[in-house]
Image (tube, rainbow, N blue to C red; front, side, top):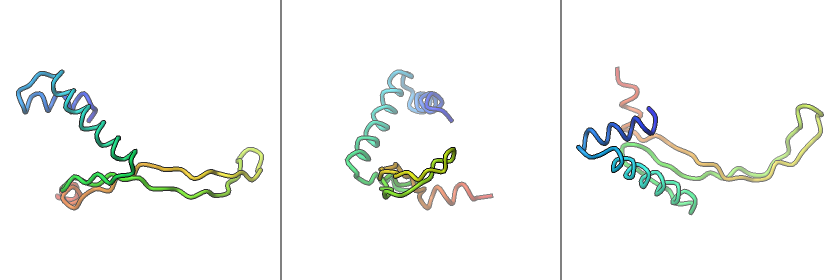
Length: 92
């Protein structure tokens, strides 16, 4: 499913225009991204949890030259599916 598919489905279900549905989707996505930037946990019960994980600095190797390099620490977004989502996916 793409973002446009989601917008279309919301517009149909709520009987609103696609433009209004797209605005709703954009506000939801932007709110999640903004909260994650502030390193807040975003928990949507039954769906899952978005948060930021911090990867520590480490040593790596350049695969071409074999030279050892320093890899700086970084923050990465992480999604953990909720119990209801896991169960829905695994139902037969």
